[in-house]
Amino acid sequence: MARTRWLVLASMILVVAALALSPANGTVVGFSAAFVPAYLAAIFLIELMTAYLLWQQFQAQGEIRMFGLSLTYLSTALLLIPSALVHPYAVDGGGILNGNASSSSWLWVAWHVLFPLGLALSLAPWSPRVVGYVRDNRKAVGRWALGAVVVGVGGLGFVFTRGSGGVPFVGGMLDYRRMTGTFGPWVLLVCAVSLVIVAVRSHSNHALERWILVSAVALTGDTLLTVAAGDRLTLGWYAGRALALTATGAVLVGLTREVGRMYREALISIDMLKEQNERDALTGVYSRRAILDRADSLMHNPHGLSMAVLDLDHFKSINDTYGHPVGDEVLVWVAWPYDELPAGGRCGRPTRW
Image 1 (cartoon, helix red, strand yellow):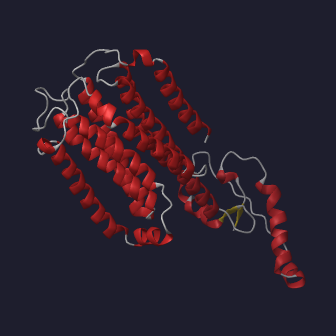
Image 2 (tube, helix red, strand yellow):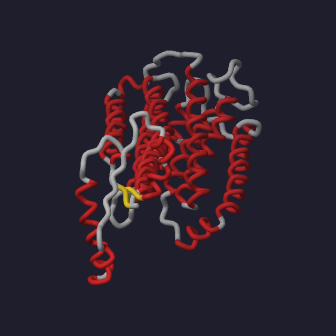
Image 3 (tube, helix red, strand yellow):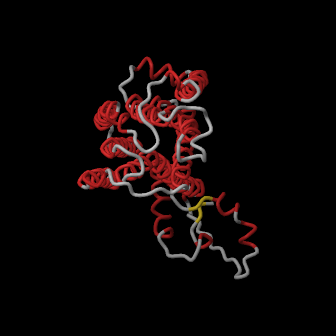
């Protein structure tokens, strides 16, 4: 929890620091032909990996939040495909798909609206009936949802590229102030509302939801800086791209940490189960099975093998006179001091035969 708080705080500090430099936000920093393709490819791969991991968790557990998050990341990842094909700096010649100069700006709006809406809807307080239906029918619901995402994103990509003749012109290339001035405040409002919903719905005992909060903070900062900058290739624009990478990668980092934690816990559980399987349930010393499983290696020990047998005389009379519970307690007390003896290995430990 403490680490996630530091990440949220760091994201906020980055936003505040960038806004503090607002007089320089509109300063053109420079152009690198490799930046935009590398940036789009990085976000695409991060979102696709995140969507896959979340989808696997949804299929295993049926949690509706995993369902919504996986569809959100899949949608935004697919939306990057037409974005890259029309972006003026991603492909030589101004893009492959036939779109107008504002196609890239419209796709930016779509991505920055779809992402926060998906985060908010994933953590929304869905009714128990909906939660139960999605959980119980997750395979069928998942197939329909995946189809709807592909068709929906494909439709958006078509409208903003091949069908861009019917889309209003909102600016292009370097200057897209018309887009940020007209739609920027509304996109920022969507991000801010999403941030509030995520902050309210995030629970301290759910590690993944804390990383979603980091993503929502960074996404809001990305939108704020981009709108404030106005133009591409400016200081604010580059700072926004850094926060966009943070927004897309936060949940993947959280998932990776969660998988690592679960793997470590699984290894500890396996060792504990193995230890319990080799121990006698009553006395706690090693069982006969543990020694028999190692009999072959013990017999071929180059240092030799020695065995001492401790026999309790007249033990049956204790059970007959005082009962089996008392007899079991005697066995525990007899085994305890021998189990506490230091030994170089398990072969030197007492065993209940």
